[in-house]
Image (cartoon, rainbow, N blue to C red):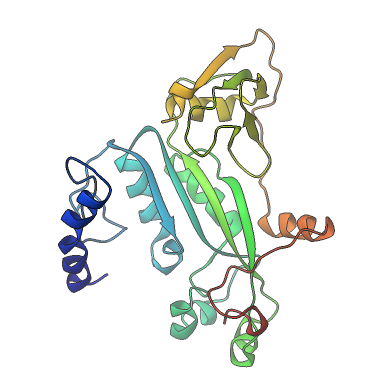
Length: 262
């Protein structure tokens, strides 16, 4: 984002404050790098959530991005983001391809690398929310990429507190606007309104410290009902399972579906 773009955004803060009936602005714009959020002026241990859409793959230092996100999030804070992932460990010649980097392809992590980085930085395991295929059909790209497959996957990572829960039951009260019937956690777990649901210790630890805490009733159990161990989830396997069930799967692409994304 350029300085000029930020100045245009700032010009419209007052307009949107008035339009949506806020007494004061609830947004600000700063210039900086995602690898150095502290240097951009963001406070440590301050934010409830960071939202990002297909940006992390463009950074040459993904570990720094996750470290900075972890630093500015408060305990129980969440990194909720979608990005491009591959099922292949890309070769160096692919990584150095500037055209493919600009297309958000050659900077993609192998999906397992996200789990490794999350653990190294101190986040919870990445919880897979959704995934969509990314089609590549340009011959010049396929020649470089070979059999590598790509997808867009949305994950949520939590900055966990030191105090951990064992398996528990959780009841959601339905008070969040737009989620009155249930709270979707990831592609496997939805907490229905006013119903006790057994969840793993890892998940309830994240939820209890998060911005969702006030909407939940947590009942600890004498015996663990759910294992805290959770296997790594392959987003490409989820895509295959959805296809096998006959689900309609939209491509993660702004361009015409017939021509693919790249």
